[in-house]
Amino acid sequence: MFSIEQAVVETYAEHRRLRDKEVEEIYDRFQDFYRKLAHDKEPYEPTSTRADLHALIDAILRNLDLRQETGLDEHLVNNPDYRHGNSPYSSIEALYAKCFSYLRKSARFWRKESRGNGYLNFISDQLSDLGA
Image (cartoon, rainbow, N blue to C red; front, side):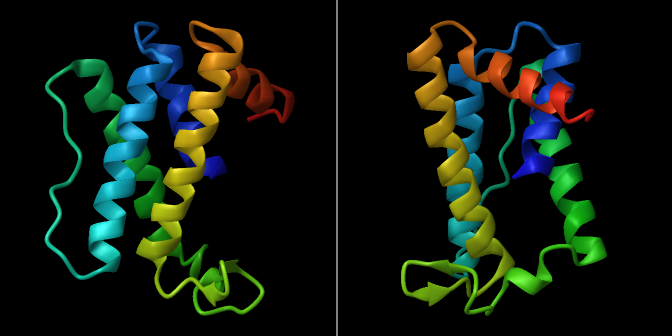
């Protein structure tokens, strides 16, 4: 999830028009995309005609593609130590769908808790504290 939020923070730094609600919607699109992939359905890759949302989508895809190319998440698949409920994640796509579900809930929480861009401000602060 760090790679996803890192992509969001980097995009937000360049596109200050970006809003929490829009990030939630992008997370929702990615959750649907990866859920469909996990179930062997033909999904449409998330897209947008708005420059800031397009940049966000590209940044997320770029970070996740890099993770997949380098195998950073392979150890989480079919591993009984990492589960969704009682079952291990059956695929990278199922794992990513769950990550986007969690991130969408977090974005919603911080948007409602802090109003405005509470989520974007929160993750920007958290990642800057980590030196990211």
